[in-house]
Image 1 (cartoon, rainbow, N blue to C red):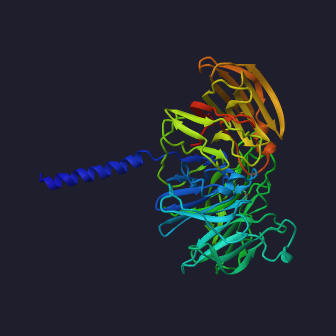
Image 2: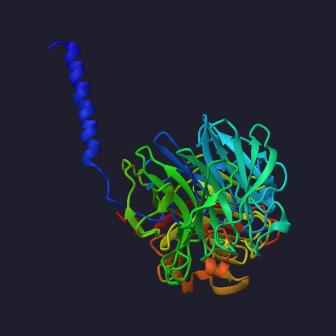
Image 3: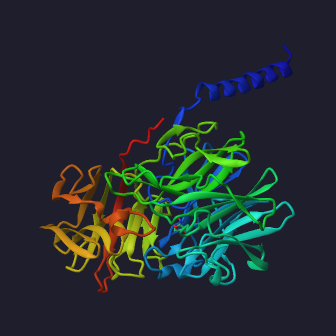
Length: 546
Ligand code: 6LW
């Protein structure tokens, strides 16, 4: 055989094998919602080739606006944050809980990713751009003036770019109480300047619709579609759709609106609060929607608003969401895309890298770098700020709670502790609703705030420099705490503790729960550092809806 032929034969066999490989592993039939569990509200999605990117709102936490990547719309991996340079958003240092970064829109146009959002009470609307969604992302470009929450960007075929915002342009025309509306205006993306006249597009479809917000505009088969959230981001939440021949309207509402809601399913529905959708067409011609919803764990919303996926089909030029059931399901048939799971990540963080792993967040944007990764330890400055103070960024390094059931543990050391010096673990939602499990002075202490009231659960003598601390969250909405000098010798403390302080039911608000590391000197100066050898977050929920 001649050499060239043999080479070609090898290539042919190789390509066939690859093809067969893909067929041999077709992936599961179904997927499980939510696609991004735990504090992942207001999802927005875009696509480049066969890669999908999704962003969420992040409120007072930093880095801001997590960005996830997927190839199959089901398996998602955190790849970056749209704002991670702390100099870019100094306004986020002092925001109130549940203010800060609201619903973003993520889009890709002509080689650039755009993420536009609102920093509520911290500068208003801005966008950032990146060539690579993994970063670096640009400095914020601020859109001039007060523009309302939930901005959207839409590129029309003629090259003009449109900004849609929420609000009522002429307040005397507010059609009813609690009305909000959507308007549109051209934008110059070089300067952030809005151009020409604003045009009011809608106040929502339902008579007396509350809080119409979260607009996204698309052009599909020659028509303009406007999708909005209405009803407010609670149990009345819904998705409504409008259509027009012109980008500035008039927009005709779909007579079957809302196209998606669980508002009429009653308070026992497992998935509820469905709304705030964004649409995407796959390379295989299917349409899917991401949207936020909450899960009901025995009446408690423990994981706040999360990101869900549901199928969309077109009928007579209108979108049908998950027909014929018209519900977001926990287990559903997965998209026709190559199954592409990411390798499972180790659950234990050893702090061996120079930088903190992407999963870790701070409460607000730290003004100074009060932590360091050194020799396989995370060293955290023991600072006066505490978790119950407002508008500060205490020494907290937090990991999103992505499961109802999880184990979080750490090995912490704080030498020669004074009575005011503490370090350990927190389960955190906001200053009025959080748990602390710390070495403090010559004790180990367990207490929590629920609706701003301090509940002291237990305090036991403990004098060693270092300890392993462990929290187990169980599905009956309880937290179990244990501690000891090594992982093999843990003693439980405090019995079973009500875990609902960080639920939506108790904490209220838009943000979500975290678990993580914490150090404080309780309003006094300290020059100590707390050293964390490792931190482990192990989710115990069944991810296997397939
Ligand atoms: C968001 C608004 C909403 O900006 O809640 O669910 C606000 N919808 O659209 C905060 O997430």
